[in-house]
Amino acid sequence: MNEWHVVENGNTIGPISQQELLDGLASGRFHQDTLVWRQGLTTWTPAGRVPELSASSQNRPIMPPVPPPSGQMAHEIDFEIFGHEMQFVEIELDPNESVVAEAGAMMYMEDGIQLDTVFGDGSHASETGTLMDKLFSAGKRLITGEGLFCTIFTNKGIGKKKVAFASPYPGKIIPLDLKKLDGRLICQKDAFLCAAKGVSIGIAFQRKIGVALFGGEGFIMQKLEGDGMVFVHAGGTIIEKQLDPGQTLRVDTGCLVALTQTVNYDIQFVGNVKSAIFGGEGFFYATLTGPGHVWLQSLPFSRLAGRIHEAAPQNKSGGFAGRDEGSILGGLGNLFER
Image (cartoon, rainbow, N blue to C red; front, side):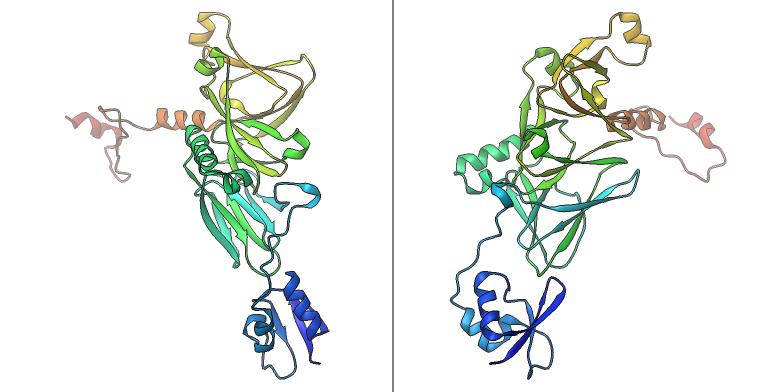
C-alpha cells in the first residue's frame, strides 16, 4: 500500500495510507485540489489529477458546506481591523465559509476566494425561500437605498483564506456580534459594511410621524437580524453609550449610527426659534431613551460633505468653479467673467 503525504491547512501531514486518503476525500476533509505526494510522483499534485485517487472519488457524494456550530444560522468568521482613521477589516474564512458585503466595499482577497453576486441580501431565507421571498428580500434593500444585489465572498480553496473590506470615507469600523444584542440591531441606512453570511439585512419603519419627517433618515432605517458578526462603519470617532431604563440622551440626528431594539427613538424640537435659527444645530434633535446601547459618530458624512460644498468656490449656476492653480490673478480673474 502506498504511503501518502498531504498538505492540509498549510501543514504537511503523513505518511498516511491510501485508504485513509480516500476516506478523507469521501468525508470532505480533503478535496480534489488538495496537494498530495507519494513516492513515484515528481512533485506535489492535486488529488484530482492522480488516477488512483480521482477514479475512486468520482462517484463520491458532494459534501455540503460545514454547518455553523451549535445550530447557529450565520457563518462564524474571524476578523482583524487595521488602521485608525482610515480603517479596513480583514476577514478570515474557513473552507466553505462566506461573508456578505455591499457592492464596492471589497479591498483585496486572496486566491481561492470566489465572488458571487446574488439577488437580495444573501441570507439563508433569500437563498432557500420562494421567488416571492427573494423578491421581498431584494425589495427591502432597494427601499433602504441599496442595490437589488449584494456580493458574497466564499472560500473555495484549501485552508483559511482572507478577504478585506474598507470604509468609503474616513471613520471607524464597529464589529458587533448579533448574538450578544438579542439578534437585532437598528442602524442608519448607509452604515452597513459587511456581515457573516446568514445575517438578514432588512428595513425598520419608524412609526412616529415626527421621526419620519424630521429624523434625517425618513420612515426607514436598516435592520440587521441574525446571530453572526456584522460590521458597521461611521465617520470620525465612535462612542458607545449604555442607557439605563428611563435614561435619556439627546443627540444630533446625523450623529446617530446604531441602537439596540430596546431603545426608544424620538424627535424633539430644540425649544425656541431663536436657538434653532442662530444656534447652528438645526430645529430638531433625537432623544434616545433606555434601556439599551447606542452608537454615535462625531463626524457624519453629510456634515463633512456640507462643509466641503460650502468651502468650495462656486460659479453663478451653483456648480463648482474651476480655478487654474498657476494663475497669477487668482480670485481677481473672476471679475472678468460674464
